Length: 338
Ligand code: CA
Image 1 (cartoon, helix red, strand yellow):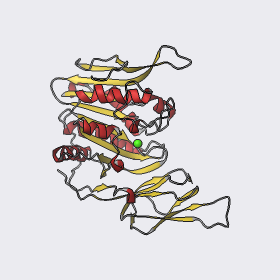
Image 2: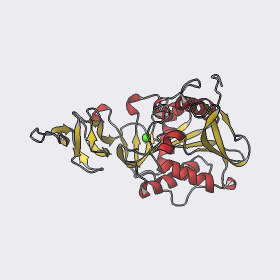
Image 3: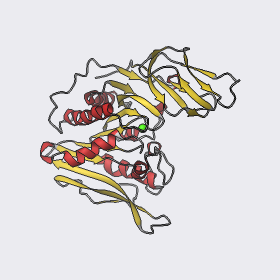
Image 4: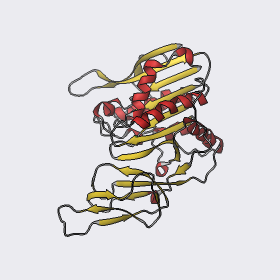
């Protein structure tokens, strides 16, 4: 590791069998002089094979990933594993305990901190540890997201684009193996500071998800997520293939068509979206309106879609301020797939 970190772990990543412990990040606030932030980690290793890193709780208000990975910590039998599984069910543990997207300790969105900073705040130190210590021992990375408190998103598996065409196909094959009802290529407008962008930069086969949201636990998304995480491990040869793995070929692959894929609030007020998720919409069509509830004689502001596609994500809280993301469109993906 080129960058010095004071973090330490209570598991041995090379030891066979199942271990459950913590990554400790020394943290010294007012009420705890020499304490640590304890991030749960489990390692399940058996024989020779690839290493998969499965992460949840990057955003602390997205619950399907942490629930499913917690089940795997408790239930996955080392004898069923060929290779190694590293489970990080609550990576941004302070955000997970608070049920918030961002860390209540330093206010940071972990998914905008990569490659992190081993001399930075808790969240920056955590992403630096993942980037510098965990990614280099991995072959594949699965980052389980949902829509969070502010968005409800159609349950989907996410392809993080890779510049190298072979790497891109490797990512797409693993994402299709997840077996979500939808597959979506998401580049977050070219954002390089996400965990999946950093995992791609580290050369790992990378899989993301968006599972429902609205700050709730969706039973349907939980089922998809539970099956999908195991499907990816089977795809990598770490677990036996599940007999009910759905065929990948007949499921649509979509992408968010850049800035026109997003509908942002044009004013402060209360947003009324006109369509349910999954609706086919067209550029120029009315998408919703922002009401001025304290000034009823003032007409609401009308928002319009700027792209053709299906309604993929929808803001959950009614109250908006100018610039909030209200709606997200996904359109057919034209790029290369395996
Ligand atoms: Ca998220």
